Length: 362
Length: 269
Ligand SMILES: Nc1ncnc2c1ncn2[C@@H]1O[C@H](COP(=O)(O)OP(=O)(O)OP(=O)(O)O)[C@@H](O)[C@H]1O
Ligand SMILES: [Mg+2]
View (spheres, rainbow over the protein chains, first blue to last red):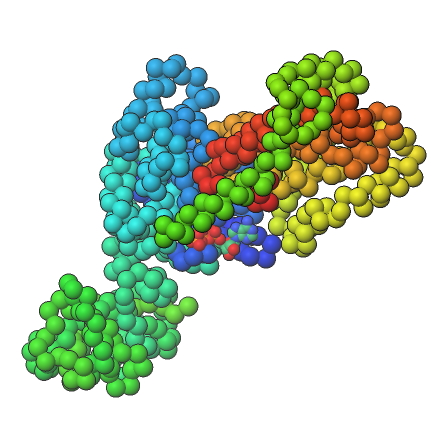
C-alpha cells in the first residue's frame, strides 16, 4: 500500500438514464491530503462525492479506500463521513445528541461519550452549545456542528459538499482558513467539493477540475494557474488571454509557432503536437506589460494597440487593448496604471515568451 | 392609528362572541336546575351530570362511537400514511390533478357521499350497522389525514436519512432514530383529528346504521323528549371540553419539532 494511493477512484462512471453525470474518472488521493473537486454547476461533483460516500452506485468502475474495495459497501459501513451541503442537522435532537449520533455502535461509557462530544465541540469552537437545537443555530454554527458530528467518528476520509456555499463572503473566508487549519491538525483526508475557484485554490493541496463529468486536470493550485493543460481549465481559473496560433515546425525541445498577427516565435515543446496544427497561446493578464512607447522596456514581443476599456479594482486595474487583426481585446492587469493611458489612447503591449503557455485545442 | 386598532379590537370581540356564545350556552344550561333552556337561570345543579352518568343507552352509544372512531382513525391514518409517502417521495405525473382528487371529498356534500355509500354497501350485501359506518368513516377521514401528513412530509429532508446512514445506521436504525420521530407528531395529529371527525359525524352514521347508535345519533334521538334534554346538554358540555383538548393537542403536536422550525398550516386543520 502506498500513501499516495490512499483513495483510488478507478474508471468510475455514473449514468442517470441518458445523462452521463460522471464520465470515466480516475483519481488517486494521498493520505492526509486536502483534495478539491472544482467545476461549474451540474458537472457531476456531487455525484462523484456521493459515489465515494456510497449513496450512489457507479455504473462502471470501482472505488478503493485504504486498499479495500468499497464499491459494494453500504454508506453506514464505509470509513467515510460526509458534511452535507445543507448540513442535515437532525432537528428533533439537540446538538449534543446530534454529535453522539454516530457513536452509538461504539458502546462507550457516559463519561467517554461526554469527553468525545466535548472534544468535538472544542475543535469547532462551539463549547457550551450542547443543548441547542438546529433552529437555534446560525448557518455558520450549523456548518460547524455538521463538521463536528462527522469528525467525532474519526473517519479516514471526510467528504464535504460545498459546505461554505450558504455562508456570506466574510464568514466564508474565515471558515476557509479555519477548515484548512483543522484539516492540518486532525490529519484526516478531506475531499472538498466547490464551484468557487478561489476557494479551491486557497485551501487545497491539489485540485481536480471537472467539466461535463470528466476530470480535465489534477494539479496543485499553483500549477493549475501557471500551466493549464486545457482551454477550459485556463479559462475557468482566473483571467486569461487566448491567441490563435499555428504550429510551424516541431523538434525535440522547441516548437515554432506563428501567432496570428504577432509573428513567428520559438516556444518550449509540449506533448502531442504536430506541424500545421492550429493551437492556442495562453497569456495571463498580469504577465503582459503596458507602456506608452515601444522602447521603454525590453521584451520578446512588443506590439502597438489602442485602449478600448479600463476597469478599476482598487489594488489593480484591468486594461483592455485592441490590436489590429485580433478579434478580442487583450486583457492586461496592472497595479500602477500609467499616466495618460486612458480610453482610446495608443499604447504598446509587451509580452515575454516565457509567459506564453501553449494549449492544444479541444 | 389608535382608532383603527379600537375598531379592530371591537370586531374581534364580536367575532369571538358570535362563534362561542351559542356553544357556551350548553355548559351554562347543563348546570341549570330546570328542564327548559330559558333564561333566567333557576339555580346550580349537578343532577343532569348524575343522570348522564347513569344512562345506560348513552354508555352503549358512547362505546360504539369510541369503537368506530378508534378503528376509523387507525385505518385512515395508515392508508393516508402510505399514500402521503408515495405522494411526496415520487414525482408523480399529474401531481396537481391527484392533489385535487385528494381534496375533492371536502367539497362533495356529505349527504351525497352518504347516499352513494349506502348504495355501495347494500349492493355489496353488507348489513347496515356499525361495520358500514366504520368503513365509511375510514373513507371520509382519509383525505383529512392526507392533508396533515403530506404537509409534514413535504418538508422532510431526504438528506437527514442519508446523514443517519452516513453516521453508521442501517435502514432499520435510520427509520427508528430519524424518520419515525420526525413524522410521529403528524401521525399522532392525524389519529386525533380523524378520531374527532368520526366521533361527531352524523349524516353517514344516520344513513348507514341500524339499531346500534353512535353518540351523535343517540343525542339526536333524545332531543325529541324535553325531559331528556338537560342530560344531553351535560353530555354536550363534556364533549366540547374533550374535543377542544384533543384538537389543541393535535395542533401542538403537528408543529412540534417541525424540521424547518416554521409553522406549517396547509389546509388549516
Ligand atoms: N438522481 C439523479 N437523477 C438523474 N439525474 C441526476 C441525478 N443526480 C444528478 N443528476 C444529473 O447529473 C448531473 C450532475 O449532477 P451533480 O449534482 O453531480 O452536479 P454538481 O456538479 O454537484 O452541480 P452543483 O454545483 O450545481 O451542485 C446533472 O446533469 C444532474 O442533472
Ligand atoms: Mg452539487
